[in-house]
Image (cartoon, rainbow, N blue to C red; front, side, top):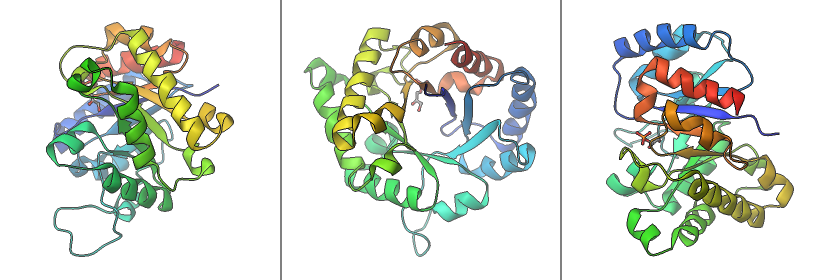
Length: 254
Ligand code: 13P
């Protein structure tokens, strides 16, 4: 049985003060929740505050939204895996479609980041997903396969088992359009098939695959009930502590 993993991707939202007030409310909401992994990916500027507020809590873990693959050096504006580890960060979102589309990240660059994260004992949440044009051309499976093979080159089966994949159809992000549960399940199954080809069936069966794209309290339970949907990567709806807590609770009961 794969434990569900529900993650908040705050993107470029929430100041340090907002983060503090969110955590105060959210922790009360999830006080009695167990059996699900809860992750929050705030902007870099809030990571230190979250670490300080959570102390050694295992209940809520933090993720960075990005990192660079080099350990240190003249890379203005970038953050390394070690810098994140110092703040007790456990996960790092890599290859988000906004990074791919707005900042031009390629599978080759994302692959370097995936390897660097693993080497520093950060768990990648690797995002993959097709655009609307690609779906309309029935190319989603091919696109997912290319992204997975490119981003995971050189990753061993043992390492793969620790990675989280987030399937995020680009056309469903921030648009209010969610993939139907069947569309999502079909793509998750395809992702697992490609992972099995990259490693073996037993390893692929261990990998948690999150769905992302307009997840909200009203649709979370149905998505999370699908056999190959092992969690959610939530953008807009994760900014509200009560709403995000409801999605987390849907992960417990799914
Ligand atoms: P929304 O939930 O706002 O559609 O964003 C999804 C996403 O990109 C999470 O990484």
